[in-house]
Length: 325
Ligand code: ACO
Image 1 (spheres, rainbow, N blue to C red):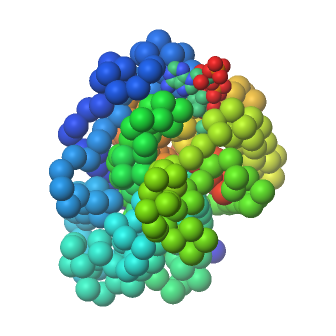
Image 2: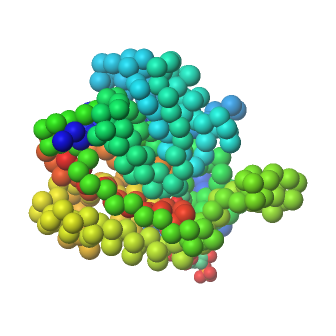
Image 3: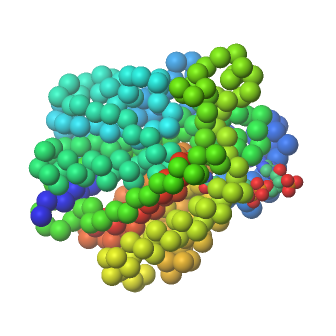
């Protein structure tokens, strides 16, 4: 059987650090509230005119290609998972391909909010498993600062900008993506969304005045769904693959809230040494959180490690994947 293995991983975060202290000067909040409710201490922001999500993806991908010792021309497919595309169309994948010189690749964007990377990884793996492609880039990139209302304390403290990316290649020795369980529930749309600029609410002065071009979240409701569903889907994938907590080397969870991560780890019986957490430094970077964790933990990962990745996001979308490193 051909499986899709991650053969390289990389990431990129912009230099500017937005601290809780700085947020205190912008909205009615405080460091203690943010840290105790979310675990976030700071996040990175992409500053500067004309800078977009593709500008997060390009340095991450260029570093990945260098690590793997290949060129952009070797890439056959690029899937950019993002909720903050450079523009409505063309796809950010096209823009990225052009910027890096991936002239032999086709590509598209995939939108599943914070579950984007897991949806992208699973989709990409089909092209590897079928034998159609042998080098596929899965990119999780979001410039959340472009859709955050920095006057809304409910959301502006949560999000940051960043990118993580992986290269998928075929493996026939049992490594790579073993299983994935992905779910959606459109009834969740009302709790977490960005309504403006789509075909339902095309951009107008009214949509701008109503702040409909910013992300909107009913935090408490989303929290309840996230904490239950993420823990449930991790339990489900463990049971399906007959994995005990001892069998699992690492949990790479979406970084939305430290309390959600802790609850998921606890349900799975995983001690904190096995759980990748960097929310304190980067906040919620949406599609980028999981590959950014893999990037940060790369030097600790050993061949054959069993990694469970899990996410929950707007849509609602959620899921878990089981990967043998
Ligand atoms: N600083 C100070 N006080 C605040 C702040 C703030 N930044 N934000 C809200 N508060 C206040 C509220 O107004 C509220 O006050 P009230 O009781 O007087 O009304 C109080 O703090 C409690 O607010 P809650 O919303 O109940 O706080 P909660 O403990 O639920 O934490 C949070 C909020 C962090 C947003 C949490 O609900 C959460 O993490 N939700 C899930 C996020 C998530 O997983 N999203 C999915 C992925 S994101 C994506 O897909 C794009």
